[in-house]
Length: 239
Image (cartoon, rainbow, N blue to C red; front, side):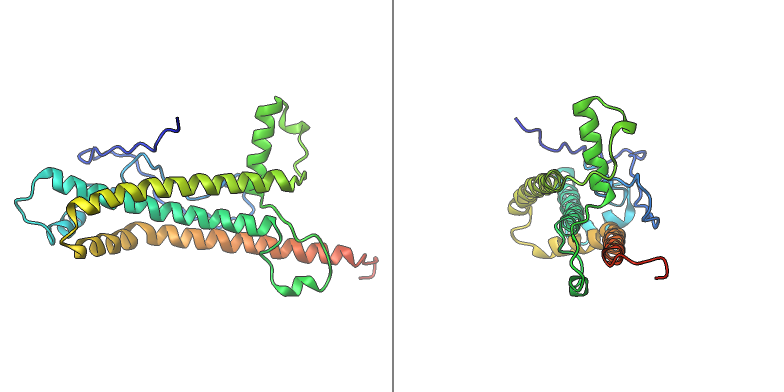
């Protein structure tokens, strides 16, 4: 039986460990994680804690000040689920960029002028594959060919990660719909307000990070294509 993502809703904990998004501009970093956006799904982002006055003020604009704690907690859950959905959607976009690169569909038409293999699997995908091979074969890193380009295995890996992300999105969407049906049938404005708040204070930076990641993947892809085309022309020592 598949384990569902667990969500800790202890909102009074001032010391909840939340990783702030970090933008790494070094696209040559071979230790980049597979999906780069590494927030934990088991923790509440700081900006959604009930100890955050900005979040509480936003909620109180739409509910009675005498509302019970369970109602406020449900709205917090709604915001957290929405955060996770948007974060996972960004992760899926990165996986899609990996897939386009690995299947040779990321470049522009100008790369068709000189016929070369247009499939380029980013180093992040290869590193995951190498780790899997190490675990399966019990061999050392020195015995692994880091230039090995097993296209079928890489494609399977990326598609599997994308499928897992879709399943998580569906899970959180179902939880979101449950709360919406019970608490927001007569007030759609609060849903709009929460979505705007989540986008502005939580997702905006992650979106920039995702855009940077995709741009760097595209840069590496274009560079590799130009290098392959140059080698295909078999330049002599004077070229």
